[in-house]
Image (cartoon, rainbow, N blue to C red; front, side, top):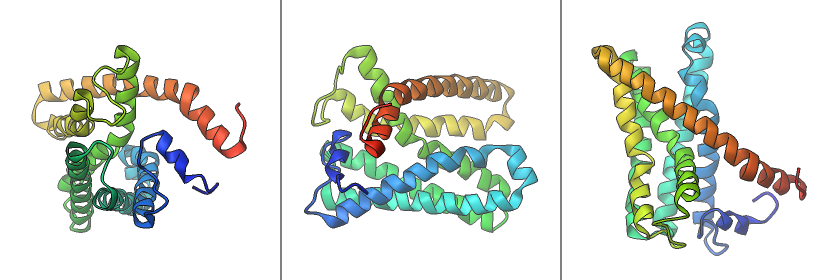
Length: 230
């Protein structure tokens, strides 16, 4: 966008940029900017030694985190209302549901923190984190699926059976894992299962992130800023 090449967004997902709709462009830019900060700040909020030793820092980052979640959620919803998604009504509904849940989780996380209800604050913060990483997992899951199946169930207009599944699959399973983590203190079996599941997911995400960054995103980012490859 800074280079005046907003059309390049459409290389990642068709229809993200439309020169004739300033509101939609502002909305999706807000969504992406807020989402980028969420992905960067989220892990900091989950590190217990940081929360315990630097509570002021945790609260400051937490306020920014919640604000970015609100920006990302509201921006995404505004874009859907103004422009719609490439996948039509199923994608509109699935993505809108994600935006609404993001706003609810952000509001509840902030509300319980202000009221001093730390157990409820922690539970909603975990749900919020599970939702915010959905946009990252959406790309990971698509990339892995393409690599394994050769785009089975996908179409250029995102109306294949796999596309229909993915409009909710990138965030609803995350909430199931989040609930296991929240409730692990109530059951030793749930605690062990949740811990093992999180480790497996983390390992897969790290591997996929490194692969995509090294082969696709990293060179693309360098090329976008410098006009040349590594």
